[in-house]
Image (tube, rainbow, N blue to C red; front, side, top):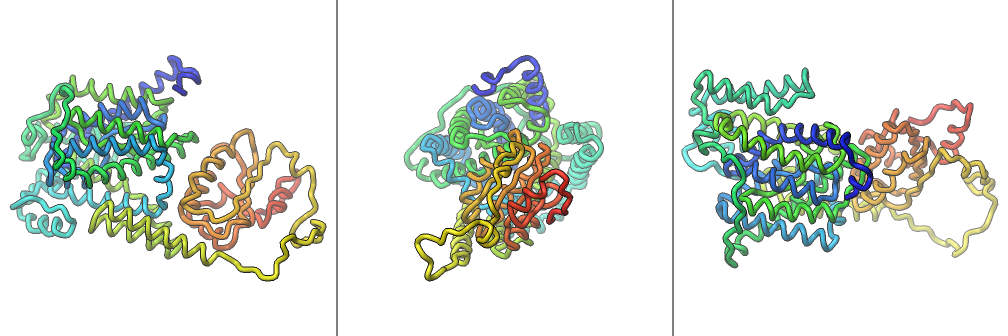
Length: 552
């Protein structure tokens, strides 16, 4: 293991233990809330976090990834349970695990990175809207006359019809939970706000004897430990019936996991191994299903919490699973007192945080093409189907890319095969070569040639990650870039942020007005980045005693 080869001692273990405990405290209420929202019992969410989270951390390609049940799967899992039952869900989860492992072994994980940035932002926001809508009945304590519809519009109509059954006590518990989380986030950000909020709500229900549903009244509590592993019931007809669900689980699991790994890379400066990560996700789904769990994926919020808590490596994720198991063994009877309205409040906050509000607004303003891809993906996810939203969004983004490429081609006539050899000083904007330009060990110059779009973003991003390696100045020449899309702009924003944190001066030169406008809209601007007309201008401004003002 890389972490142990680098040197792993008591200090690193202490850091991982603290971060693992922190993540476990966050994951405890979330795992139960996601399971209940998915149409299964809360213990299945804990089984998923314990078994799946352990395997993801032990075998994964990202040293900071935290695996477990994710809000993104609520819609798909709930639909599968309603149609095929829990047995069908477990079989689909095993099949999805096989597909994910196969994708990793065949080294196809690289292609998942080709999904455009507006698609990921759009489907994440769409999922958040659906999660929030699914919790309205619990937040208001509503009693529906029949089964709650899945599609959004019929769901909202049924909820409006049931408003006469509003439970004031349940609504008060929801408000108390959300208010506690928000206040702690503002005044005590280091405290486990979600767990404290659920604890306060549970005490209020128990002490005041409020008439609200709890885990105990609906599910009878949770067991004190893991069940024995068992194979799901298998039949050819059943496997064919759940095949579309398994494919959807695998596709969304791959996207969500690699997106979470990319977030961890951006926070730490590391690079994950996508194919290794997908193999681990595959085995994690198989393992979780054998213990009666649901779909496993990398979880962005818990992974980010792991990094912020000071994790050193995957031991943190392994310990997070063990801490969750200890919580089950010790505190399982207390879970019966948790009100469902409190868990609905937790998911309402999760849904709000899932929406990348700044990125959404930036994409709407950046260009009509990115705005179109974003809104089409978002609306299809909300009103039609998650997989359909991703596929159509990707196809639309590809068509727009082809259109942009076609418009960026310039046709020149009567050009000789070999250009005339003239001195640099008389060749347009070129300057005579100076050996000192290549002798500055503190400055590195990279040049990007060709279209910089979502298909090339991951490759360029891997190169840009090394900009802070023993360098003080970094110049990125974009004079050969005919156009740049929002995915590429997002990559450069991350590179600029890392450069500023490392104390590296970052220059972008030769950017066209359109490219520069796109970058500035995505936050690639002063003070993180300065713009110059050419590499020569940037080098001149780096010379001692030069005080010229850079373009901003």
